[in-house]
Image (cartoon, rainbow, N blue to C red; front, top):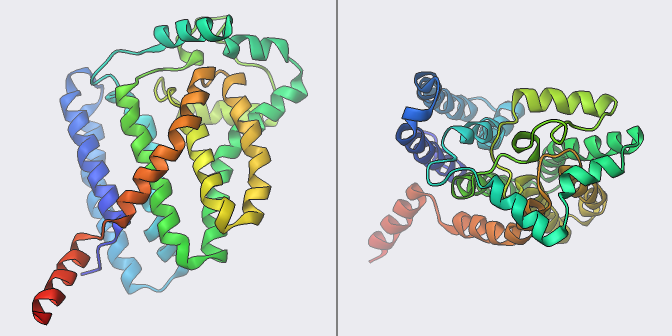
Length: 296
């Protein structure tokens, strides 16, 4: 039997809790049978991956075995739309009122209207897209440069994403592009990255997860993790994170207050992820207990 790792416990804990959320919300979820069926198929697939990665020394398979919860997190995000109103209805009207009270305008509408240059728009779309590259390059950088920290980095990043997904249940919001009606909801024009983001949003973006911004929060967490351990990566990444922060409002994915929420909550979520990582897996706890008993 392959040894259970922290990342496996994290994955199956999230899978179990989110499945429970789906079942509780099943009356308002379309294709609930399909969603549950996918999860039923996912479990043996993951066990097969764990088993074969132990038997096969293939580096790619080993890498996949240690990062599968992070890879699947993209699907888990889009799925939150099915149960993000488990406790409350969308809070967008309150977020809009708060924006008006703080700024006197709606930044997500005024920002793109004021800076309507196509080159600037393309820069913003590139910045938003860099979120996905930031995660991939951070993981690969750690894997090749600091292998002994790799599992810890993957765990903390994955745990942080999962915590954000649970927060979306407490603060359900769709975001400006879904809440506003045309013409306010129309996105700025661009070139290549505009087309790429249109495709990603069509496939994965749902009216969920606006507050607080997980894009901003996770980006800040990556900067925090890399600042002391990987200064070269930090120096390379922070300019893209700055552009990303502005881009989330510019392309109407988030309200400005979502950005503030993401910035403030990122250190808290990282602390919770770090705390979770310090808890040893159950099989290690059992082993430690057995050693103590044998010693006694």
